[in-house]
Image (cartoon, rainbow, N blue to C red):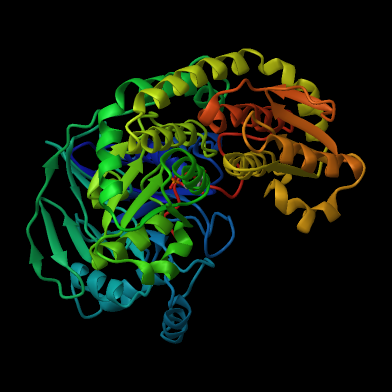
Length: 588
Ligand code: G6P
């Protein structure tokens, strides 16, 4: 993860250009941030721990006259969250400034050698070795060759952006992690995503892995490791710059929860042709796999139930990070459906690279146009959820479920049925949202809890996993999602007097069995919070979610999104930017 932004151009306030870019990129990491601005053949550095808006930005720094600056928002991998570990990092002469995304797997060996040669390090990061390695190279070579040689020595998937005080160029190189170059009339930009460049230009070049770029008077692209010149091909994208403000809401997460009915209705009305087309692709494939990470993986699990029950079709699901170890099953006829909000998650990108080598077909169900997964897929369907800012995914999750349900129904040419179920679901979510204040007594109980268990069967098993994830992500309470039948095989040992347990009991084939599981918990003193259309006597607390037929998993997650949000706020946590997490995860 980490966000990179670089500017080189005619505007003499390069630092502010970079700061504005970093604000857009902060979803990629908000442990700390920093900027290096070149002025009078030296770098002036500004670094802070914490989020950008929490820092008292040094006005002198932002008043510097400069036309070249690079910056970074950090999500810590090597080395704690400290000012010293924040990027940019410098060499001994302080004339080479560098920002980095990725992990240098062989950094310890390189560091040892550099220490022997007298280099002094100030941070605990893997990154800091890179400017020193370039410094060594520059004893015998020019800037660009030294960057190339240094980068070629790094193992792992990395992206760097580096500037030298003695040159008016910015150089970038990558073997992983996205980098996009933007060219406007007066400037060149380089960033971790297109959205941070779109306010300036739509003329973009997505840097490929194993290439480097030299940004100066013009842009040059060279292959890695050789350094052969490659064609420089900018494309003008038609994407609109998407921005999102909180509006009247106190947090993005709450706003995004409230956007769900509108998004679901839009899918119900406008996705019919696209899902019929995808259904055809699935029918023609020999072996379909859903892959995703975090919330997207849980949407994939829900998808397997939709396909089994509605379409009578077996599909496989794998956590994307595990899929790399299951690739032996793949053939050129395999179909991989990649689920991802950001379209950048490295755990998804990595196995897809291997799928491409095997010749399988990739379908992207992503929320971000132009993202890495979007670009590497053979077919793509955007989620249409609009920009999702809060780290904990809400609307992108229900959008994925809505589309997967539509595809499952499209498999049996009954897409109208799915569409009408989604319309009912959107209405029901609106009702749940209107009654959100009623959740307060449950919020009070859960806020005091150290452990929460969530159970469901069938498609509600995926709801249980996603509900527990939402609770963990933003309230920092330990929560565990389980298949109802699994409870007695272990976790029941952890239930004692007062342990809260959320039970998804929709009006489907799982009802009787999940109520039996709830009874087992209740007999051990557990407190049952039932999410169901019916008020069972066994429930200590009841959250009503009316019958939404096969779309029930879309509606019944909403009360838990609200509960998690309200608990986080009650505990004084920032639900939009939970500790240790980032919205887009581009390191392994
Ligand atoms: C991160 C986020 C999660 C998200 C997961 C997958 O861990 O914090 O909220 O579910 O990545 O992200 P994706 O963008 O691929 O859906």
